Image 1: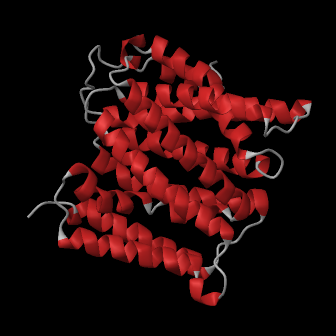
Image 2 (image 1 turned 60 degrees about the vertical axis):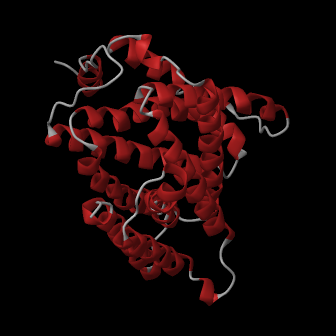
Length: 309
């Protein structure tokens, strides 16, 4: 009788990408949602591991292990599901700048994880799509409707509810998470442009590879020697990261981005569960209210605010 691990491996290896640069979409929303929910749940657990490790290791070391050790499973999945042609790089400079912004966003976010409850840090991260809307006009020349601008301003109001600046000094962790959201939004704009010429899985692969190369020299200056069990944890986190990256990409074969976008907000529920079980964190009413405002604002953009009149 097949074990659960065997069943998961068979599911991964039976996935087939088409042989071109573009991926043809086979509509199967249920399968897309199930894979996306699984990926988000695993990523939430992974973020819990990052928060735990950030109490011991510098963030550059964590991001290095996360990306470098994520490459082998990602390469294996690519080979088993169609070939290396999807890793073709069309613009080296774009990939390097993408890796720089993505690495910076992750490092800022991981500091936020260390200083804040997971649910609060995750709620602030949902601001990224709204910042992308604000950047779309000056950077991409896209027309942004008045309703979209209203959604952006409402989303920022939601983040202010979470951060509660009127209650005293804003927490440093909230500022790091907010900075991560801004840099992450720039990164999302870069990805949108790169996806016109490069395969999505190739963008992810080269980001992880270039990021690892950029961070390698920093380990000589910021490094904490792990124990045996700690090293095993860092390696497991990296391997899991590669698999999770694929689980987040794969649903796009079965459903469009607009269909899957709302599913990403299940990450807030998972972060609450992981934060409570792992760290005993209970989200405050302000965090829940602010998160609801940010989520509602993003949904407004997805379901009408972003459409041109």
